[in-house]
Amino acid sequence: MRGIAGALIVSTAACACAATPAPLPAVQPAAPAVTGGLRSPFDVEARRARIGRALPAPEAVPAAAPIRDVAGVSFYVDDSKSVADPELKAQNLAALAPLRGFVAEVTALADGWMVSRPADARYADRAAEALAAWADSGALLGAVNRQGGYEREWTLGSLALAYLKIRDAPSVPGPRQAAIQRWLCAIAAVVRPPYERMDRNSSSNNHAYWTGLAVAAAGVACQDRGHFAWGLARARIGIAQVGADGLLPLEMARERLALHYHVFALAPLVMLAELGVANGAPLYDENDHALRRLADRVIAGLADPTIFEKLSGFPQEQLTDPPRKADLAWAEPYFARFHDQRLAPWLAAARPLRDVRLGGDLTAAFE
Image 1 (cartoon, rainbow, N blue to C red):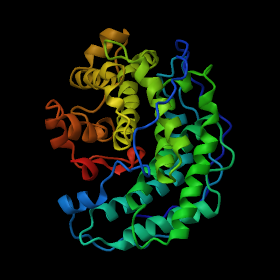
Image 2: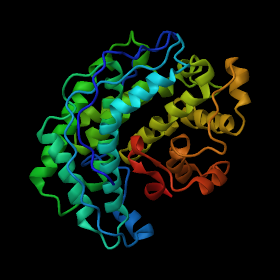
Image 3: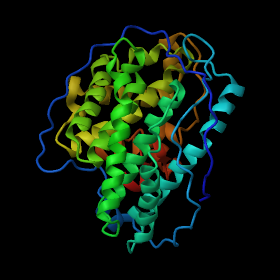
């Protein structure tokens, strides 16, 4: 892994939300029926016992310069936000490369701690050291534009989920753990307010679910039930919108990206459901098993995109065939829970599946 240094390119470009139907009202969270502390969806010791292996020592990498302000570049150029300008998209990737590099390093270290056998504390220690350096610098707590705000939310989810893998590492000093936890919950506090404005479509579409995942994971990390309940409430906004046909109206409005955004919306909802199950909130059961209807529709669409072409009235952007990488990472926890055999050949062909937005190596965590 290479160290990442430097600051983000600043852009004032903002990513406007698509013109879509009016969002649903906020859904009130139900109190999770769990006693004691909030629980991680990752059973690190069990995974190490099952799939652990000898790993080389983690590479020593230069400390990534903490990034306080996050600015991205908007790249959709049509009203439905379904057509991307390649040059603007490249500018956005370049602007966010340092931040994404740091996330990749931390999640890889956390995965190393989870799968190393015997347990190699150096993986946990270096992940915690990197997170603590950013915490001490107040990283991600500065100014953001619209696109940068989305990236900060995804980053919080990535780092909070990765941290849950090392939270119980005995070699990480308690004060360092506490500093990381305070920082994650401070970021959670600043990303919440825009999603409490229900006049914004982003408060009801996939952005809300990704932010809900980030805030809920941070809540588990620092044992903050307010953050955890808020995150689950964003999941319930999505769950409430899933129709009898398994579709999400706000994602159908993305026209040629309707299938892509159904996949993109399902991913955080599945991980939020896993967080919920770990803490006594069975989100998979809500709205007459809505998440299973949504997953069923997505699986059918991945197998035959013409389904979404007919439903949306637009040709769909080509996804990988068979599906791989982030398009399928959500399927590892879903398959572990429901054993939907339609997923089995895709998973076998694509493993190991990693998605840093879902915490890293999903195959290692759930297969």
